[in-house]
Image (cartoon, rainbow over all chains, first blue to last red; front, top):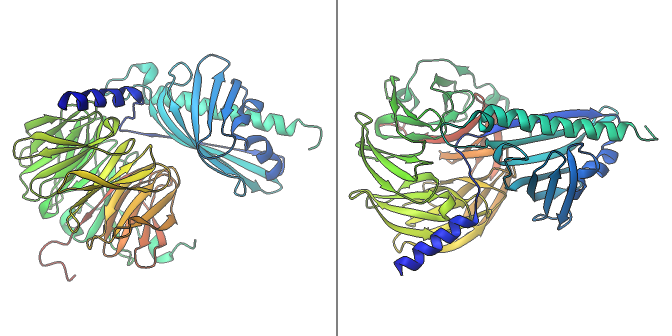
Length: 177
Length: 317
């Protein structure tokens, strides 16, 4: 019995490769866009539509549409794949929240994150907030330089900023302003 | 939600006041702000704030108004004594979860990456014992009969330690990603927040068996129980809400929106205090009306809270 339990424990442990560390970090990026909140949400809202606006993204495969539990597999142009699960999608409030399912240190040097995208009105335009919480790539006490908190912050901030810039460019360059 | 002006009026004074002045208060550990902040009951009284070493994660209360804070990245525990004097204990590994025994003899410390729980002398901070536990020990809580419960995050289990022998006597299967737990002496239960399966496991501490699973919100991250055992308050970190569970019915009585990334929760005087990690404030929830009463700004990155019960002679203050 004891051996069966031990085996089960090992199997369970092997099933989850996630390494959550003890010290999380913030990411908080916003951008204003000259378009209505509805027009912005139409582009940024679909969970599987990331490839249409994020310049770093080569391909997105989505299962489950915009329902909680949906999964998107994001392949980046520079290499690496992010598998992300949708926690909550609220069209009426123009917001959705998701989290990383499987880390890929080649894609982003972080071991886990969760994030929320929200569109609100801002004067005559819209404001998009993309905020989240992540753990560095190596959650041990002596992380190498490429997997420490600073490396994670730089990569996550860059990824969010590039995405928002791409979204703005796409929406503001359209035929109707 | 209109924020109460009286609550906003709470001022963060950089007093050197220690926990002794804080009987019947809630203390919050701010990660980026590197402070322990005292919050009086929300009656407009000022709070005090004590600087600590960088990136405190968990704050726990010992007897006599003593406070402990863990520093996983700094391999240390800060001790703030009742007179306000603070000490810095080096601790091996990645100290995260804390539980102080009510006799004031020991402090139990989870070593996150070392998969063990250490027993420190509460007098000197010296490591006096250790026990191997499941992977990524997160929350710790003491129950009856000298038992220590450990949320083994990657083990999907709660480890049960007999502290007299420092032996792991059982591993109880729970949901996915057990992160935080709390012991209820009224029903002799342990409630466990499973961060990945978005539910609360209920353990019968006498039988050491899971008896129920209650679905809550996204990423349940902390648990507190009202002293009468009726209400179990769970923060849903990713949803920005708090689930208030009826312990009798084992169902969610209310879901209350709070700040962004709510993490720790503590209960004092019929109110739940919630650390909103991302929005740098503490939500105060009235457990009678099940409504948020207001938010108290604190130093950046409030992660965990602890209710420090009134010391003897101060209960009627």
